[in-house]
Amino acid sequence: MTNQNQYLPYITDSKLEAAVSNVLSAFRKAQATTDIHKNVIDPFSALFEVSLSSISYDKWIEKEKIRQAQKSLQNSIGYFHQEILGNLNGWQNLGVGQTIDICNPNKRIIAEIKNKYNTTKGSDKVRIYDTLLDSLSRPKYHQFTAYYVEIIPSSKKHYNDCFTPSDNKTKQPRTRNEKIRKISGQDFYDLATDCEQSLKMLFEVLPKVISNLTSSAELSISEKLAFESLFNKAF
Image (cartoon, rainbow, N blue to C red):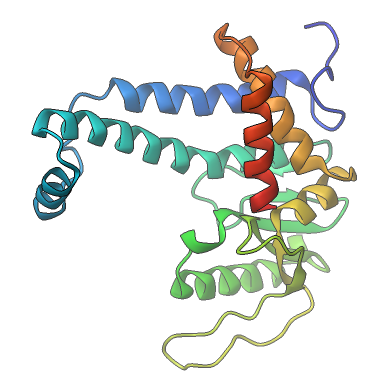
């Protein structure tokens, strides 16, 4: 593509396609994996599912392969958002295994990205708070604001609040700090891109990107409407 922004106004086509390609590769790799016992399967759960669903063991094996591939896909989506946000103009993707995920020196923002509100346990939220607090104490991030980002929120409400997770050991919330915040995915995307409805724009363009990268047919009108409804229920 000659035009670097045919898909979205806030990220180049090449960077968007690279992020989507990584998700596709992770899913294909999971689909190609033949050893479904790489992670221990609960035989009790399997027995009940086969018995109650009236399916054969072989059918259950095929279903389990699909489930494991879907799990791998879901795990890669979190990093997908980190890639998108970290490749915006002025932003830095700090990679896997770092104390924080993305940074914008000009906006003075650092952030930890999580895909869904319920993928992070209470104890992990405390760890995230402590990590963000420690990062803000460094000279490098002096006067920055730190965000804990929940791409998919627990409800359709927008929020950008002080992040004060409760410590399971002390039963006390962490100290309120205006520089440490919890924010919904759509609000953080708008903040990062300086573009309204940017998360919805990304969702709507993905079928076209996937189609271009895989040479598959684009979604039908009815499928697009169904996915639009799914998005609206989440956001």
